[in-house]
Length: 158
Image 1: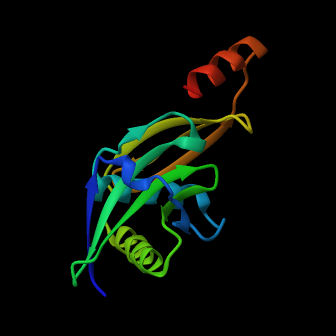
Image 2: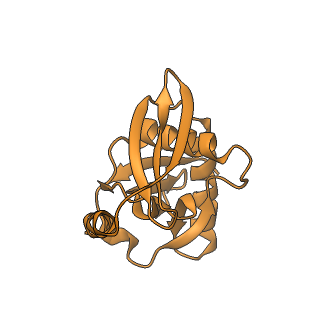
């Protein structure tokens, strides 16, 4: 069943959303896959509803999915600690639409971008993106004093 996908800025449509699919199913070459999928999402849907430097709450998109029969389903694309994922209602029509969305995103050409984020459970700094069509992902240990860490945590938690 073919679908169309449109980014909308109404996050109220996602009130009871939960994860339906991960974009990345394997840890093999995870960093490059992560960078690649984020570039593909950006290419298709532009700017998210929000974007942060906190890897566990990196971005959020609300996607209006419409089947060829005109059935509408709202899904979200987000990035949390487990990586980029698609969320929605826990019903069969949402699962079908979410699977179609994952397949659609993987078919896209990524845009070039550069991003820096923090994963505080590490704690690590991540620099990732797409440069000249090629993904990159660098993770380095975050070395901060206790005071600096608290300040970063407070900044990322807002």
